Image (cartoon, rainbow, N blue to C red; front, side):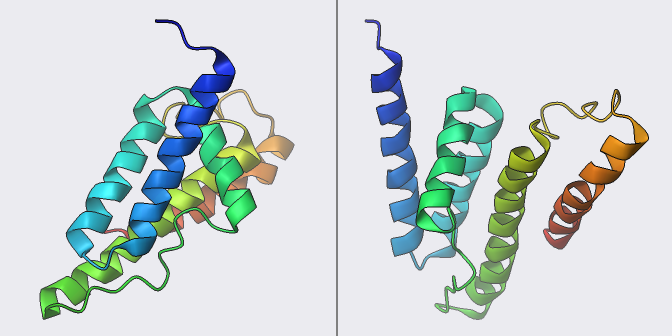
Length: 139
């Protein structure tokens, strides 16, 4: 069975909406973590159309993951996990933003800065340092 690109894009958009809906409705840290892991793995392993649609969805809805207010207060441990979930979501959002700004994926192409001149590297530095900051926040 061969799908046309319009149909494939619609399927990707449907998956993104379903993941975003799952994130917005859950108050369970484990469910939120699993959903974020699916998104992260899809960014790494799925066709670039997923990333492009995710960026497009984020632009149209304001913020894709929108986990800044996420809190699972079912137990003290869950409350602690919630803080980490918020940081992980911010890292993924920053990863998308850095791709949008830099036009390459730093996780998939770590040598993307190799052929960039000094001026270009200085222009990329704010996005790269913000991504690093978000990554360190996930420790």
